[in-house]
Structures are given as structure tokens and as C-alpha cells.
Image (cartoon, rainbow over all chains, first blue to last red; front, side, top):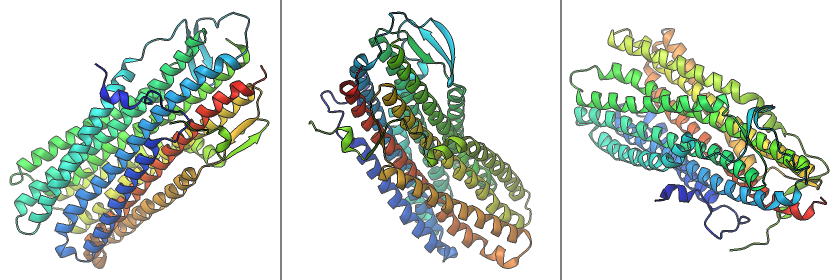
Length: 313
Length: 211
């Protein structure tokens, strides 16, 4: 059975490659809503700062809403990345149609098989298009569930932040428990959302690789593919570490919520806050490397297309 | 749904030869790595300071030490976030640069006039908001460091106002993050625009080429 999330990343059958992307418009709209929510929380914090003694309730819901705002913008970014996947499909279709007519006729010979050095890194020339790499298959399967779970945890955390806010002045024990649950849930959600975005970037890398191989094979040429760059390997490492930290911080917060009366909450909060931010920071660092890898892969492919046009092989 | 859109429907510049990178793309090429390195350093320092602060709280150290570290920890972490978002923005600019130079070089090798997209409004907004977001977060970081230093130096008034400033600055730096994320969305939206242009232009090459 086809993965329903994978279907979303392909052009609708019969769709026109020339029309503007609905994903771009929708994604930017969702992101703008997120920015609007962040503006509300900025105003809330500015007001709360002016009345520190009575600020606990405001700070509680504004924390929940801020993280929801971040999650909303990230969800908008994910929608735009889905649009990029759809557009890359259109681009491959255009290449398949145009290249047979613009490439040089060539002398009938094919590139020698084996490894070659290119300005973008080592590449391998093979006879025919290989299948997708396991990591790319996993990325295609996982981005949807990650985004769905991320959104659910962020929204659930927002509702718990309302409990935190309402109990902030009258019921300190409930407020402390709700604070721990809010932070744990929402940062787990943010971690899943960033993982979903990372998997979408992995899907883009997979599509750039597999689509390029397919185009070369459809032209009857040897398939020249860039070997996995070190930036891609480091991307996977950072993403896994970031996600593990996001899960670990959730476990620590749940433990803290269950043991409010027996552990030093202030001391634990002092390191848990930056620890949960470290998880997101590492996920974002992984995203930098994924984008850098996409840049390298695109440069390699432009070089390969020029080679095909000029030599026909 | 069909449309008569051609590459000329876009705002393009036509030249004989492929164009090179524009200034923001050159900056993107050079700066994404240093920004990533700075981000990782910021996170490492932030976590280290957080461990020191947690230990100070557990040991019952002075209020000024705890309050001072309470400002320095977010300063380090958000210096890290500002850097990592900058690295993401520069990496997006690098992708846009590869699409621009690669697309131009492919047209040039096909022996047709080279059409290059002029910078779309989303790309201009991307750069403007990125700069604004960077300044917002860095303003928060600098303010945290200044207040943290004042509290550490023993200023009683700084210690008294410390929490109020922490609340205000938290709002400012969080808004900076949301603004940065929105700028990144605009940068990625620009990539969609460029890919659409390229899908149209590639098909046109087949009818224009003299091969």
C-alpha cells in the first residue's frame, strides 16, 4: 500500500508544471499565523515584566503560546518543503522531455565505470540507476508521522500551559507539575517537528539523487552519482543526537513532575531548560548540513547536465 | 488547469553568458560554515554555564551569582540560536546560488540566450527579515550580558530589576526566533519559485537550441 504521506510529495496527476505552487502560498500563510502568535506573546511578556509579582499566570500561558507559535511557523516551513519536493518532480519531468533533444549525439561510447573525482567530491559511474538508499526510504516514510506527532505534542502542551496558568497563583504544587509537563511536551513536539523537517530534507536529497539517476538512465547513458558527502553523514548524526536529547528531556520533565515534593525543582530546571534547547540546537545544526548537502548535490547535477549536453555521454 | 506561462513571464535578465553568484549568495557560500561553528560553541558554553548555575542553586550560593548566571545562560544559548539560524539562511542562499549559476551554465552549454531570474520579492524580504531577526536576538543577547555583568559586579539595583529584565528579554529573543523562522520560510519559498522557472525554461531550450 502506498504511503499516504509520500503521495503528498508528488505532483497531482495531470497537474500543470507552469502554475504557481499552492504549497508556497499555504506554507507562507501558516508561517505568518505563527509570527502573529509570537507577536501576541511578545506583548504579553512586555506587560508581565511591568508587574513581576503578578506575572506568573501570564508567563505560563505565554510560554505555551510562544512554543505553539514556533511550531506553527515550522509546520509552515514543512508545507513549503513538500512544495519543493513536488517542484523537483516537475523539474525532472522537464529534463526527461528536453534533454534528448538538446544533448550532443556523441560517439556512442559510454563513460567508464568506477569512481571519479569531481569538483564536488567523489562520484561513482554505474551501469544503471540504483534503488533508493535505505536512509532516503526511511526519510520518505518518517516525515509525516514525525510532523503529526510533533504538532499533537505542541498543542497538548499548550492546553497544559492553560492549567499551569490558572493554578499559578493559588495552587503551587499543581502549577509546578503543569509547568514541567508543558515544557516537556512542547519541546518534545518541537523536536519531532524539526525531525519531520529533517526527514523532508532527507527526502529532497533522495529525490535529487534518484531522479538524477533515472534521467541519465532514460537517456541510455551511464549513471554518474555523487557519493554521500561527509556533510550528509554528519547531518544524520546530529539529527539523531538532537532527537535523543529531545526525548530524554521529556523523560526528565515527567520524572520531575512526578517527584515535585522530593527533588530540587529550581536546580533541575536550571539545567533542563538549556538541555532541551541543546536538543533543538543540534537538530537545527543538522538541518544546516542537510541544506549544504543539497547545495552540493545541485551543483554536481548542473555539472553533469552540462557534460551530457556537451558530450552526449 | 493550463496556463500560457513562459520563462519570459518571469522577471528575467537575458545575457550571452551564464551569470555568477550575486553578493548575498557569495556571502552564503563563505559564511555558513563559520556560523555553524559559532552556533555549536554557543550551545556548548550555554550548557556548561547552566550546569554551573544548577550547582550554585543546589549549593545555596549567593543570589547575585545565581541571577547573574541566569542572564549569561540564555545569552550563550541564544547567541548559538542566532548563529544556527544565520547558518541555515546562508545555506539557503547557497542553494539559490547553485540554482542560479547551474541553470545559467546549462543554458549557455545548450547555445541559447541565458535567462536568469532577477531577485524575487520573497528573496528580498528573506534577507531583510533575516537581518532584523538577527539584530533582535543579538540585542537580547547583549542586554543579557550587560545585566548579568552588572548583577555579578554587586549592583543591588541591577539584582532587584534582574527578574523584570529577564521577562522582557525572554519575550524579545523569542520574537526574534519566530521572525528568523519566518524569514527562512520566505527563503525556502524562493527556492520553489526558482524551481518552477527552471522547469519551464528547460523545456524551452529544446525548441530554441540549434543542435
